[in-house]
Length: 554
Image (cartoon, rainbow, N blue to C red; front, top):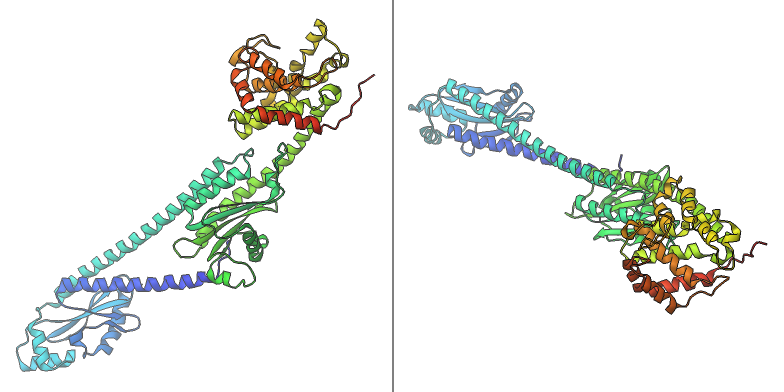
């Protein structure tokens, strides 16, 4: 359950008071309807306490003490009655609404004309006014039979009850519609959230989308989230930041530091539940730097660990947050918390996987000292080409892996061929051409990296069909293989070998331009020259940073 401040009790009392006012308003409306029906004004009494709520001004001197006592019985029995029958007058009492509504309407009626002085005197005594006033009042009255009064009262009462029921049902329908609207928005938001959760997405993507959706649904001026560093580590990235990530949408009034301090003061980590604080609750925390009029905070928890927090600040209508906002934010936080826990586990597995990939890459480098660092440089150049070609983050990660693993098949190449300082014989060349297929066979059983297999198998295919191992032509060559082919050729031609010096930049550029549309995809060669400055810097920096000192095998 969400923790709610003392303001909720005040809200409950206010609702009860408002309901009482609404009941009285219903009774007064029924009083107006009775006046239209009978053509005379009615007094309104509280059938429980006997209080006169609405009096008839010219008949204020009657025996209201007796009449109010009788009205309590009328309210209890729930049907219209004549509570005073003294010729020439009767007093009609009509209960309004159901028994739960203790209002009673009362009015006097004449049952025969008033002609004699004795009748006027008697009438004056009953209703508590002077004989002259009683005479004037009697002249304005219509003559009724008691039976007609009760029959019409029964019909009027039925109509009042029906109107009351319609009003109550209408209020229930409105409340249900409001609840259904809130529930629909909550379900729609949770559906969108679960549909868009992918482990490959970083918290930046899913966190930003979630806050956009919350701002549309919650009556808040601003929303915010903070995620722990553990949810943001990418084992294949150099841009990991060891700090929490804070993001907000709308007019969220607090900074990251203020929000963090406030969360600590509110005890969210202790409750592990959504916490609602409105003005009265916030005011009690004098030593905290409080930045909002009211606040809802929900922790992102999974397996006992807190991965961050969601918050909504300042009700935009000037009202206060309650269980509806707490429930919605709590539901979203639960889903995000589980997702963050899964992301952390996924990152840990990815770290292990990244270690295995780097170990394989290092194994290739250790086997051939002259190409040491080649796989890492190919990976970085391939990623830079992917950026230039407008590829997304997942595609860039795939190319990074493909670059690291593209030569893994060289593990199966004979050392004397791989490390031969001179020109290869035709047989030796055919043997070394086996490494793409060998790499494919080594990796194809690993489901997690099956998406890099096309680059491993086909990075030596040629645009004109003269490459190997399958002689693919043009766009039949997988796109990632075409990118790795350019990165691989660039680094291989620019690196020193025992039998030759690495090519200078001008010679490299000439060969690449000449091979566009023949050996390599011209579109990728164009991207290469657009990013030429960055690619040269990648190549230079990686060669400078190379620290391995491997001696050739005897």
